[in-house]
Length: 241
Ligand code: FES
Image 1 (cartoon, rainbow, N blue to C red):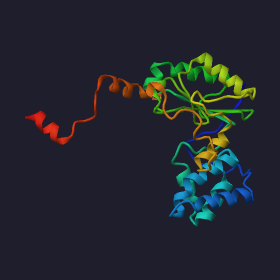
Image 2: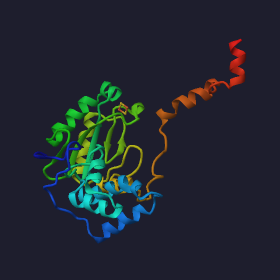
Image 3: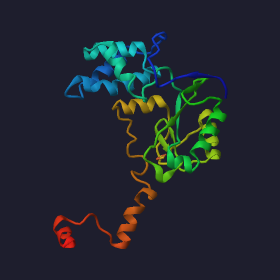
Image 4: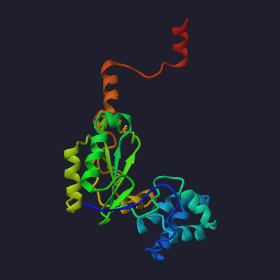
């Protein structure tokens, strides 16, 4: 795998690329999202996720359509889209890979993991492989430190990763083999995940556990030792006297 395009999640939207797949069906879907919120402007973030699901990025046409539906200016839409790193200015890959290199993951091998992924894909962070199959992002703590180091594939967790497991995972995805998050759900595509972030139910919310064993270890230990939570105000008063 080699060659790349920068997808970048910083700077301005690429207004030179007017390609789009937004058709009437997509416009109807975007309009339907507005109905879920008491104030229509509140639908903008999910609408931008849906634009990404269709166009692979926040496209000029997507900005225009969102502005028209919400009755705000394209500049206001672009201002929101360029504030958040989850919105991409150029096309991300079919699979969007995130590697956590924040403190705990870094200590547990996150940096080595990122180096492995970069070498394997022939790209660095904020880039997409030339074949459009993968894009790569260095992500901040995913609140999954008890499974460090973690990778994300289309925002699904891959826990307790190693460079070897990462290489196998990328091979499986590239070959189109069935891949599941270490927490259960099947990994399909970044576009599908973006639809979920737009609020469209894919029916997979109950696939996999809601909390893994390491996350529940404190609860187990507290039960075993008979520890309880913060004492109530009365007993605390007694303890202070
Ligand atoms: S440091 Fe990586 S999940 Fe927290």
